[in-house]
Length: 342
Image 1 (cartoon, helix red, strand yellow):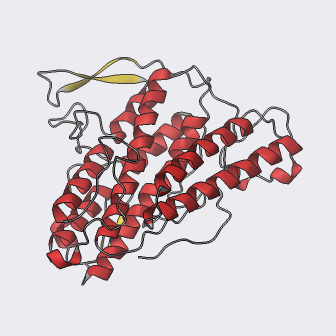
Image 2: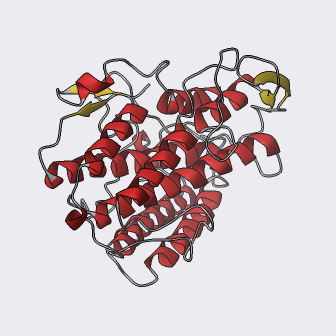
């Protein structure tokens, strides 16, 4: 599981630093999840694809909600693309590296590692609030929620650069104008990501607040190739059921971690496709920065850039590399500079 460093905030600037850490982390999960999704062969693995679609969409919502919190407390949203392979932002365990894996068991196990909850939530959580300590994602958000609750009403700005579901993600995305809104946003982020910290054989429930499996359990279903069914009368209310129908062979022959690959030795078509991926990803990052800075229609521009990235990725996945067999998905390489402050 990911562990983040928590430093007790002494004012709103420190809280903004923590919110930026949350934005960075939410954004950093998207490329690994998208790489796995994009490398699935069309028309295959429908059940696995549906689960990945939900996870990717909700992670985008989480990033937007965290950004809404930042803008509501007077900060500036930074969209800071990490490099892959590499550590996820804020993770204190440098031995863990996030990779861009094609759709595979390794990709699903990585998703479980990213989303893994602590079981149970550590008794030391209260101590972490007053002393530097590594905490899980869920614990980090709990501490952030507690810090936001202490801000005076005057620290909140109504309607400042907010992204809501009139622009995208109908029914999921909402403006943050006060602590109550921020608390609701954090509840959604944690419940949809980690869920409750139990296994299906234990007392408790892996549901999120919307009667759906949290991300950790969705990755677990695909990795295990088995559906988690509701099972009244069992300790958790769930039990492993029928096969999900995962076909690990129905995947493009995409290389892992294309950021490490030297494309200068590949055919011109493969080079051009990867350049298009880089340009599209750069456009997406820039559009997100504009959207969270209050640019009118900015999220719409970002959505179009997202579709552009998908089209570029499809071209790359059909352009053989020098070995004549392998292909590459997008390296998620940003061509511009660092973008944001707290």
